Image 1 (spheres, helix red, strand yellow):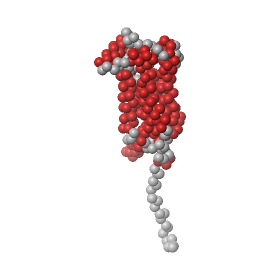
Image 2 (cartoon, helix red, strand yellow):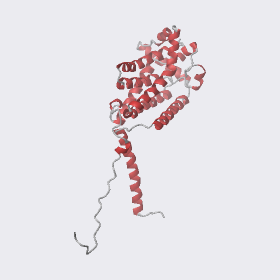
Image 3 (cartoon, helix red, strand yellow):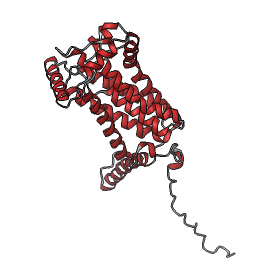
Image 4 (cartoon, helix red, strand yellow):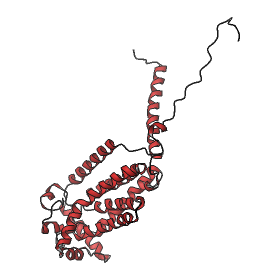
Length: 299
């Protein structure tokens, strides 16, 4: 029979507040000292997050008129700053067949492969830093979705009258979502910001800060610079797109710093303690001595 009295109501309130308090304590404890990540959870989280990212990115209406207007605006803005060198770079690389073909494959595949590889490396070798670094990557990607939606932008290769070369279409390389048959299932006007730069910068900084070998750190710093050359040479992005992608990465790291109270790379390499050792023991009330019967002999 349900207890509707004051005592029953008070008990329910205590239980509710206790459960909520435990949840809050667990969340605070995670951000103070991240535990070891669980493989099954991370696989589900990353798979689900990328599915949502692709769904939202490709569900944005392809507003070609606005995208072309924005492209002309970006191009004129870069010309006013005297940095509009993308067309010259695009034509120069296209004149070297083997080089531009390699750049096409780089653009189509490497940002997925290396981002996943760095996440796996963090998971295995830096579990104490993994959650904070992963959060910065997720925030970086989440911010980009706002740019895709509110600022549709035709990439240089699709800008009307821009005289850029679509290097994938010309050289018939496979694997790119940007040209050919795959273009029909991908939003072609999601160019601002460049997540090739956002993700490559996240990977590069992670490796540069955490790798032990000097040559790996150098490669980490070179990677986003090489990606910048590729996205411009293949006429997939403007310099302004790259700058916006780098800004997204910076905001992602700042958000992670705010959540965890420290930069992702400065956290301990491994969790300080396992979950079982961080749960405080339940205090038992002091037991009272059992009263002795009246008339019992004294010791």
